[in-house]
Image 1 (cartoon, rainbow, N blue to C red):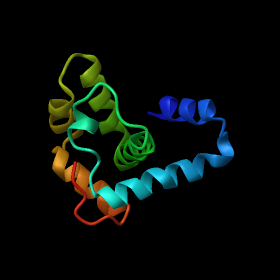
Image 2: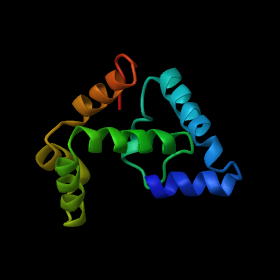
Image 3: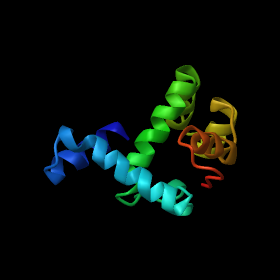
Length: 113
């Protein structure tokens, strides 16, 4: 997520000085929609441009919560486990609970996947 988000900023010509604005734009979209995009976020091969800063923030949230659990989650996916099973079994949370906690951290009530 970090690499892709940084690449998109560089390709757009905005540079690092606009990183905060780029993240703010993603947050505005997230607050307006009150969801992460549903299937277009979790079950597609390509997310929409507004979702990249959201993915970056979600990744940061998960690693801040517990970096070791996040590492176990990523390793499980690399080993062939489906991401949703790895989230539950290796990170230790169900998707809806993760998204709700993420929403609370951003002061977005009732955030949905």
